[in-house]
Structures are given as C-alpha cells and as structure tokens.
Length: 137
Ligand code: HEM
Image (cartoon, rainbow, N blue to C red; front, side, top):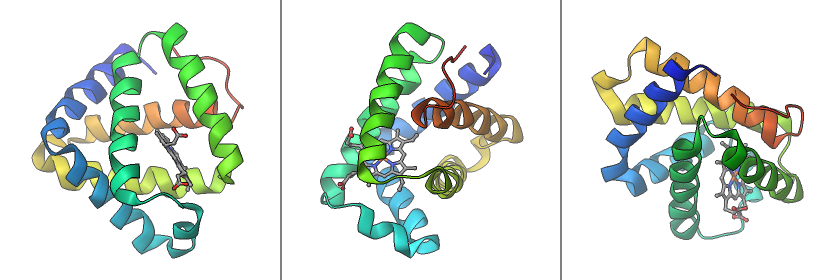
C-alpha cells in the first residue's frame, strides 16, 4: 500500500466514525444477505461483535504506515480467525461486503480513488491475516 492509499483510507474512515455501530450492522446485513452460510461461523451476539469489529478497524486504520504496530496486531487477529474456521474464500466475501458498506455509508465521498485505496489496503490486511504476506508498507 502507498501513502496515498493510507491517507484515503484514514480520511474516509474518519467520516464513518460517528455512525460506527450502524455501519457495523449494515456490514453484517450485507455479508449475510449474500453469504447466508457464513452466519453460523459467528457465535457471539452481533451487538457485541459489531463494536469489537469497529474498535479493531479503528486500531488497524490508525496503525497504517506503522508496520511495527500493525503487523503483530494483524498476525494475532489472523491466527484467531483460523481458529474460528475462516478460510481465504471467506475473505473475498467479507471484502465485497466491506466495500459495499463503505459505498453505502460514504455516499458521494466514496470516490473511485477511495474504493481503490480500500481494495489495496484490505488486500494487504487479508494477506497478513492469512499468513501469506509478511510485510505491510
Ligand atoms: C479485515 C478483516 C477482519 C477484521 C478486522 C476482523 C475483526 C474481528 C474482530 C475484532 C473480532 C473479535 C474477536 C477477535 O478479536 O478475535 C472478530 C471475530 C470474528 N470474525 Fe472477524 N475480522 C476480519 C475478517 C473476518 C472474515 C473474513 C471472517 C469470515 C467469515 C470473519 C469472521 C469472524 C468470526 C466468525 C469471528 C468470531 C466471532 C464469533 O464467534 O461470533 N472475520 N473479527
């Protein structure tokens, strides 16, 4: 990821912050509408899970550009996700639901550049969480 991707992701994330928990609900709605089979992986109440997800996004987005902070956080998160039974294919569905949620939540602020920046950043995050990538820039 490049510094312009980091900037676009951080700026657009800041716009969603005030509506964070609604964004999380919308995200799960998008994810399960398209992938009903993925619902059973989640055992935790989504009203607990949603805020946990938003906190993790807050930390990860704030740590972009600081690999010494970001890498261990994502590697540990990735290890937990392997234990939850999450596979590489799940990440594709998750990334699509994330991009849809950003488009719905950001409206006109979801420019093509912002979409591309999230795609690149999510791709790197996915790589580290799956253990197939050992660096983030
Ligand atoms: C950017 C990618 C992702 C982030 C930031 C993320 C974040 C989180 C966080 C913060 C938790 C709370 C527990 C913990 O910290 O271990 C969690 C749990 C979980 N995540 Fe993710 N996740 C990501 C990708 C995925 C994917 C691709 C799936 C596939 C379905 C998934 C499924 C789950 C499940 C099943 C749980 C366990 C919660 C439960 O038992 O209800 N996550 N995730």
